Length: 191
Image (cartoon, rainbow, N blue to C red; front, top):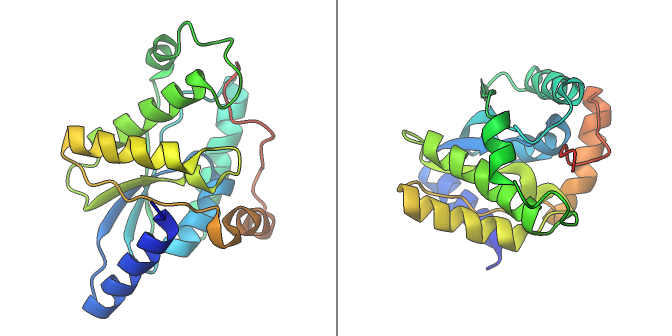
């Protein structure tokens, strides 16, 4: 799968058809979302979803939520949804995986959990996707395979992406500086 090539082809088709489909975009944080939203908002009607029960402690969660809100102040055409209150469910989801290394089984379970909740919330949207693929620390192939599988299981349409292509991560750093966004130094999980 070449998610970036496929996305570019879809965008070209949308432009020639004059269509602007709706997209529920799971945002892991403001800095990662900056490039993804900047890249997509001319082609999709975006609703940005902040659903991240993995972020601990609460003070870190609050900083990231503040950065997310600050980012969206720069995109008046993007709606937002903030969902909290799933911390206990998240801890149960990763129970027993606390000591796995970064990028291992715990991370995969975390990504799957957040994508499943996004898919479940995407009723009424043409697509759902995540900003997680912008990170060079995240496996875009795993994320896209998981999103496609969960989309099929929930009757939602997942939009495969690989936002780190086209220097997406570097551009997210530049946009974060431009917008004055707080940039974290870890994924958010206390483990």
